[in-house]
Image 1: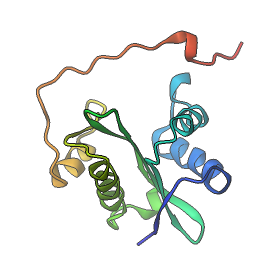
Image 2 (image 1 turned 90 degrees about the horizontal axis):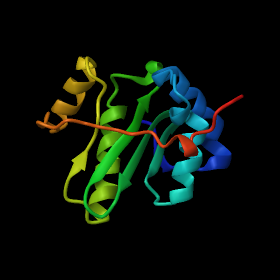
Image 3 (image 1 turned 135 degrees about the vertical axis):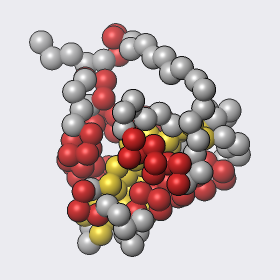
Image 4 (image 1 turned 90 degrees about the vertical axis):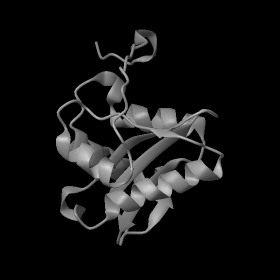
Length: 146
């Protein structure tokens, strides 16, 4: 099993960007890996974790906590390291970190139609809740090339 570590910008940044591009294939500017990393580092909440094997990043998870609820984001496992329990280990690690901060409930969002990911989280005790997820982009904070 890959060791789980706190994210270190000097050691992990380029590998995390590459992993997220491989796993998520971002299409919108507000989801650019470099921007997401920079924004998470600004918060400095110690809830950004990586899994490594031989100094190579094999997985990531971001967690967030606002004092009311915790959130999981960017749960990514490199395709070559899937089905080995790494995703489960990342989620459990983040859950423990959130619990240590006093978190009582964790939420996450899954893109509609991503049934295999729904099954993964269901096996870890997460359930679909009757909610409508809404979002709004704040364009003034999103870098645009041009």
